[in-house]
Length: 204
Image 1 (cartoon, one colour):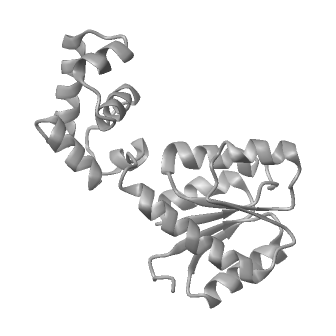
Image 2 (cartoon, rainbow, N blue to C red):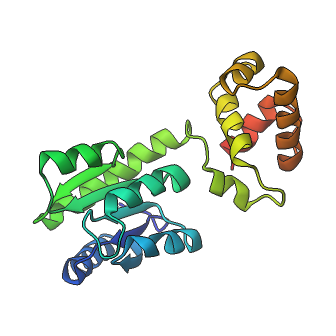
């Protein structure tokens, strides 16, 4: 059974379908945080609410498609999403697949298909999250002095287990410059070493 913390955002351009999805999910015990029709509105909702999963249409009102929104979700928020769409052609599937959706349901769909897909998507995400570096936005929410994009890239390298020599080489900086970046990162997060940094990130 879903837990109370399972908050779902529905991004669907058809109001009738959006209502059906909301009722279906609420009947199954989920909390539908919002139901919106434009991708441009999604970031505001995500930033102001705890979202566990997004049900995402590909064809949306506004200038941004669901696939473009999925790329932003992956880059900045790392929230699992399920595509729910009438598009099943090869070109659309190819574009959608590179965003690594947690599920892909083709309209018209049966109501009984949605909740199992959400359960599986949440379970897979929970299994992955322990090995997933928190997004830059999530990290900076709790910091007074913000981590820069350059520093975040170095944190990605530390997270992956690379040595200082490898990180310096891959980022085209000297070892001394890398040490300066690491000192700045440690100072902002209030840690003193790579193990402490990794431990902090695991709990961020």
